[in-house]
Length: 403
Image 1 (cartoon, one colour):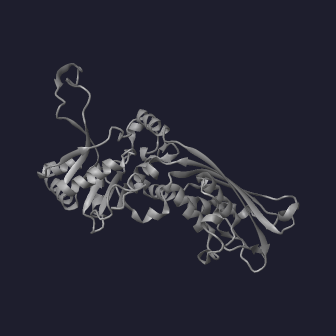
Image 2: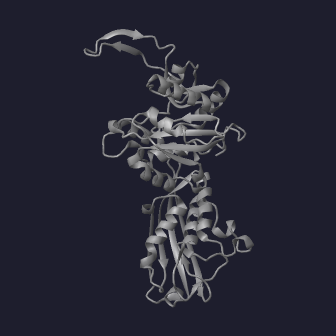
Image 3: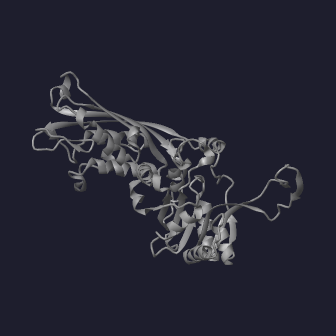
């Protein structure tokens, strides 16, 4: 997806505080780990910022007890070519402490800082662009939407209405909230010096005396706080869901003086598979299945054996390239089922390692990749030990906002 923000925009970072326990959601897991239509909530939130070239760093502030799990989740589900953008900090007792920790981790070159709620996965690119541009122009802005509903002021104990509140100049704050990095650092330093606790970054800037401007947010940029919000989020994603099936098949001859590579694993054997690349039939079948779901031909069209650059190349690398193309086209692997047809050698002891390799290449959890091996009871070319073949079937699902 092409970004609305030029790559010449000042270097910008996003801080995503994700150290909360999500107690209002109930359950025993923080809400950022909850599944939302097949993908963790925090993953969906992070993905919304990855199409913008100007965003060079994303700082995830995690609870110390969940830091390792957070890292593993994001590295599994986010495309490998953006892993270098991810930074991790440990959160504090308050949101204010968590954002402050993220600020101190930012590279020196960063000029604009966005802070975004981990539980707002539907922020759109136009809203992000408006906050980035607003921070560059005005110094500090927040995304917000005008209040539409009639507001009533009530007595807390009795819930009796005392007055109707004029909503004409009221806006409902959202995130991102964006500011010049030095302004934000000054706001946090001032809050610490005056023992001020704010509810968001804008309140810290206001306490410093900085004028914070509102830019238009989006009504769908909802924050998931209660169980009912998760159900609403699933409905918002329902119209985005597209499922596509792909099938792949590959076979190679077994020959001497070649390594036997299957699923990215080198398997001790006196014969190996013949081919221009490493001849990994498992990766080739899976890659062809993904291309089939995309309607994008086959592996030979994209990586021809007439091209010297693919001589002996790792087929895991080729799989990663195709997965990246799929993600750019708005598709993500939902699950894969692979069958290796091989009489010899025995493969049972290597299937787990293959599963890990293929899942990593596809940027999914290992549970999304099923792999098994069978023989043909010594029938046919595989049964006679002349070669090895593989079948793969994949289900590809649409991704939100291209990532």
